[in-house]
Length: 401
Image (cartoon, rainbow, N blue to C red; front, side, top):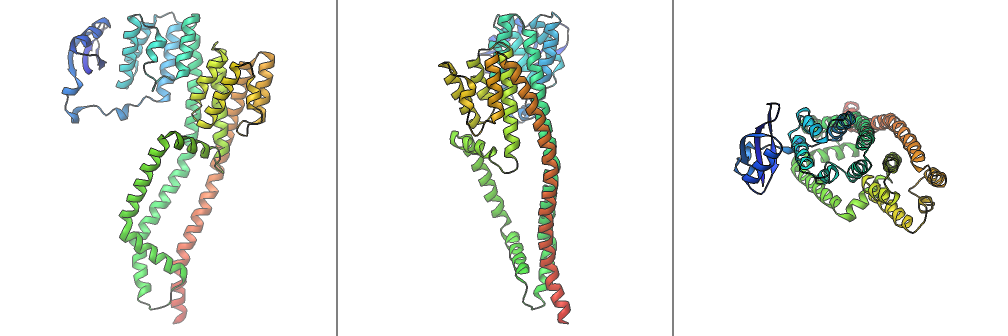
């Protein structure tokens, strides 16, 4: 059961949040353990639906996690105790949902639970990679270094995601604006023109007849098209949630004509960067591969990496598994072979990660330049069709007189 609380912390500041407990007494005990003076405590079920928080707007992003990790690493490096560090970060975090998670982490650690076990209770926020690196840092007494590794890694991931989104904003805006203009013309402009052409009692060109029929269908059955698109979108969304659907969508990503190469480079950058971080952090290679398989976020590459982990268990090298695989570039295989032979796999993987990050940046820049002329040509063809459909019968009417 969840309880909403309002309390004063040791500094006398008001703190609000949620706590999970079986009953009100247990919730009070948890809050008192965290040195909070409880001012109010209400079960979430007692709050009216309209008054509850919309947590969809409090989603914890990669940026939030990167900032938290960097700040925590700095505090730990400065010899601030972990519990005190976590509690100080509660006040610096704006999102209530993240504040509640950090509060729970501080309470768990103060109660004697290892930090890695506590963050493992929130798999939607802290990945297997994050948990493994923290566990390694706790075991070796270098938690600050592990957190700094993670902060660098998360910032690189966020930077890459931001560049991808930025590259897609302009083409998406142009496409949406063009579709909006077409819809307005179909609804308000073309019906008047078709009425005028219909009064001329002339044989209309095929392009004009197609446009008139399409306009009539759109005006009459637009709602049906909207429903079909809605159901199609929902159906695809649910199908993508199934194992078979997810695998097919992931395969399609790396086989797309223009975007496939970009996705492959993103997955290679993610694979090499994550594996380098884990190996440098002292995680055994088999465990590292199993973690990276999940973090890479593509079922095709996940299967390849998991197969490598299984074959490494019986003494084979990663390079032998990757060799000849059409989804793994030959350069990656060769570099990993060199790293395995020289015992510097983490160094080689870090070099690969930097290379593919540059490749992704270059591909994004080239993609933006490529999409713009494609959009212009596509819009030009559509506009040309519309203009000819209208001008041809008008020209025929003018020459008839």
